[in-house]
Length: 446
Ligand code: ARG
Image 1 (cartoon, rainbow, N blue to C red):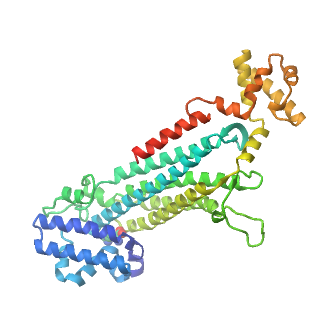
Image 2: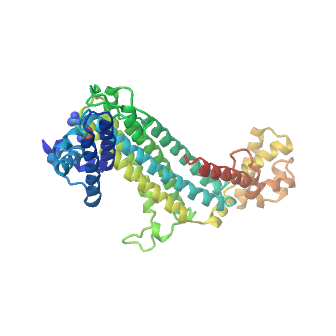
């Protein structure tokens, strides 16, 4: 029974939040004259001492004490005597754990947000540096149109922006205080839930005691936000794996972010990127785990809910690693821009520019222009040259409406420079977006 029942092996991680919430609670009990002020003061001082011990030596794991709430209270009693018993007036472990866990998730969100903001700064720096570097842009992983590497990195930046806003949103909804809901029905003691909420930096108390002790939406929203962020990190990691492969050769990972093979001396494996990709699966598993735990539970508290913590802790630890690893890799990778440029040149990536030119300069309907361009690509392919290397005579044979002015758009530089539509890949536009993003990051941190 003890082994299946106890949560102290994992919920000891809530000790700081547990003590913080208890201090707010006991201060309110004293202020409302629900317990003698002297006892309240003694309890508060005792809790500080417990906190100092836990900080110095860790939380002792004693299965007989079941969970962090009992462990804290029991140590408090050892330190200050029977007066400690007044701490649990007008509350239950049900509202206590709901409060502690909300406080923990709130801190976790702040930590993730700081990590994601740092990742964004790295992305902005690298994007600015690579605003003019041309690479092939892909659809279906086939060379499509030339883009700039800065533009590509800013696509990642946008993904992270949305991730941060999801966490911010989750935090806002989570930021109400369940303490004082007691076991499920509220309490007959004249407590001041607003004061406790304020002391714990919540926006206010929760409105329904049954809901308060049963709700784990805040943990689920943390997990769904974590899943979405980890999916984005996984997609970045996947591109790193592809880019680091020899056939692509777009990047060279520095020594500290690559690993060797135990038998093949030439290998420089992108293990960290692969693990970022792999961890996304585990984080998704954590989310699924808690969703399944919650889906059939009647109101109010059931012990199943004790299982809410391990998946959130696991997801948080994994996500922190993924953010740090991706930031580290992006910050230190060498972009092999000559190679990217060479492949952008080789892949007929400016075919669309030729079709667009026919539409613009020769009044050809787009569908027909597309067809003509297809013939030109075939011709270049046959000759083994790029579109820009074809002779003007080769082009006029395919269609008489083409003239030498077309060479202005057939180079990859001309192609990217022309894509000035808002949000497009033109270096000038990318620089504008980077400047805007930097200003946003500095002035509105979240
Ligand atoms: N350790 C428990 C949990 O994490 C605390 C709440 C226990 N409540 C109860 N009624 N047994 O869920």
